[in-house]
Image (cartoon, rainbow over all chains, first blue to last red; front, side, top):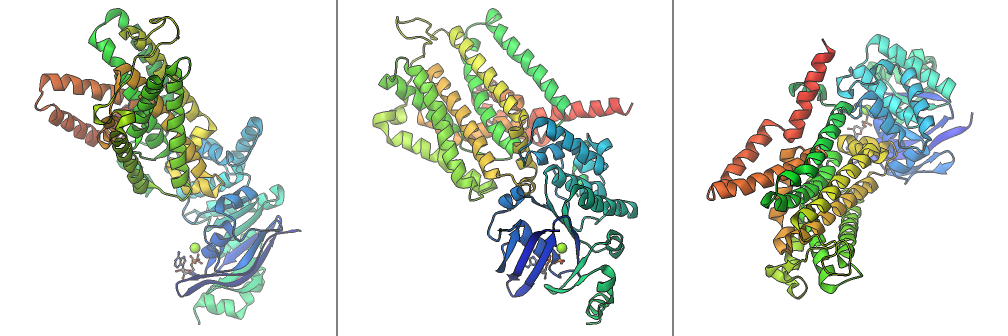
Length: 239
Length: 343
Ligand SMILES: Nc1ncnc2c1ncn2[C@@H]1O[C@H](COP(=O)(O)OP(=O)(O)O)[C@@H](O)[C@H]1O
Ligand SMILES: [Mg+2]
């Protein structure tokens, strides 16, 4: 499995607060990785530096063996890095199909290729029946799915998902897990997920990185991580 | 939260294909009626209608920007006036075999290039909202001031005479548009063509991206769209349309003066579009025609109070229908379509 993304000493300071402190992190092509950690641990900050929405105070980022530390959000998106925001960000007044079509315009595609891709995306995100529905009338969970679908329509290669299951029912959460596993195994996408729901993380059976106070506390399988004394302290608030 | 906001308005506004189809039908009927009008009507109506239609073209240039990209400009009159001066100067200096064509081209290019330059400069450093409004407001003020101060070229306060254009050169009067009906039949198809072209642009992927910018620009940026370039292109198209309308206005009215580029006139354009409905190009066009016609009618009927009466109409329309008249029609159409669907 080749390396897709690497960060080297990535640091972000906000007036006094060190939100990310010297984070070294790699993710391989086709890998699914979860980032967990308590509120304020610096998870969103890390994703924002990878997507280009925040520029690091120190450190460097490589994607597909090119250094992207100073590249703009647009250039990174064109390279295949796409982000789902913590609060769903879709085109509220457009229909599901119009949302996906618009996202697909971000990459050059033949007309026929685009049509096929949109149908495929609608099918795997279970939005087929909703294609004519206006985005603002979707349930919260469906909006989350729509935003993920937009990243797929946009032909993203690295998906950065910031709490994708927030507001979802248990059944929707399970389906999201299945979707993400399928995207990685069958479509060779790489997925970096921030998640709160430990059951969801367990179902994903993906490696976990624990962030705490801006630092990587530990990485490994969920079981390994859960056995870690420091992690228990953080999660049980024994510190 | 957004859901609540939408529900409060009573009906979900999508950018329905249904509405666009019915707008196309209305537009075809309307332009056909206008084409037949000189057969039954003559005199002042046929003289003045092309001017109203050119105001409508100016309103569409703003409608494209404000209604579809979400960028409000108070500088549309500046492009309009520059177009009219370009026409006047081209005629005065006798440029080319037919100065009118040079004037039309020059107005188009001036509007496009100036708007592209301003747009690129502002959008690439992410100037948005009120700040953009202020810059375009300043543009109007500058154009008005410059046309006043450069009086040896522009005629200053007194304005500039612009002759009626003719379609061919050579023997005087050959295909001249000096007759009211003749220029009517020149301007009407131009306006109809511009309307169709803008509708076509909006139906292209480019146009859909513009609407995406209005709806959620940050989303588009994160999907890899260079939105400043799209906004610059939209502003350039808008400037070109406004400039062309101005050139035609100049040759129709035989006159251009600095107030044509001023803040007052720019504000009027915003009012037309707000009343007509900014999310419909036809709404913007008809808003300009209807308000101009109403102004003329009221100013003859109640010379002392017409501006007050018009102001009250403006306020009433804007309070009653947020999306202008076209927006209200759109919602009624959707509501009845929804009722049919649900039995
Ligand atoms: N734009 C910002 N300005 C100042 N402080 C910020 C900003 N964004 C995040 N922070 C701070 O950085 C820390 C990490 O935040 P964040 O990355 O959002 O955490 P998480 O997503 O893990 O909950 C928090 O203490 C937060 O208050
Ligand atoms: Mg967060």
